[in-house]
Amino acid sequence: MSYCKQEGKDRIIFVTKEDHEAPSNAELIADDPDDPYEEQGLILANGDINWNCPCLGGMASGPCGSQFKEAFSCFHYSKEELKGSDCIDNFRGMQECMQKYPELYPQDEDKESSSEAESISGSAAPTEGSASPPETDSPPAATTPAADASPDSASPTETPSAS
Image (cartoon, rainbow, N blue to C red; front, side, top):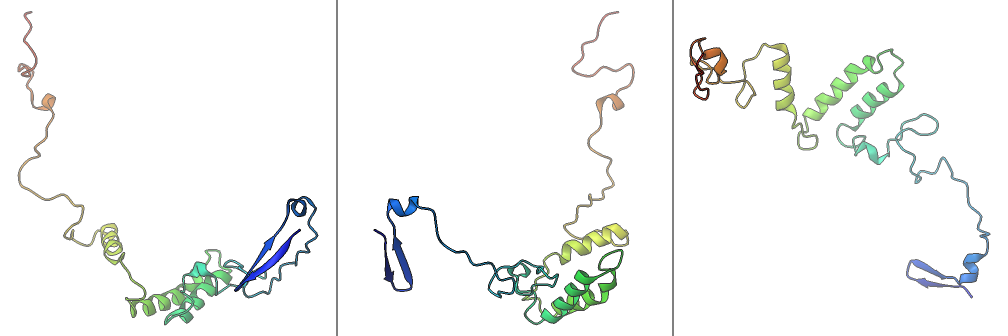
């Protein structure tokens, strides 16, 4: 015989083996697509943006939330052949806002991206810590033995053969 027991906010249901063997008569309620508590993902069934999606990481709120929403909406609804190419001003506004709040929107890639941009353009000198080789006046230390050997000299590992 099955029974229920309430413990605080929890309801514990004890069932017998016979209860489990019988087919269920539970009625499932259809999901309500308008339920605000139901996880919907980033794009809702009607094509709108779900600003409450945890996947946005809180970007839709905060000091730059309105700029983020404008830029993301523009991109989402963009009809341009190069999607979002008509949204550059929106993204620029969002970036300018984020730069005002570096503690909320850290930009650790600034050093990397600026050095990459400089190396691509070729207009900047190498910076400290860059991957450019040091410039020296001495010739390269590593050479191939074949290039330095004259035709009549033998390498130290070779034994001269009598001809």
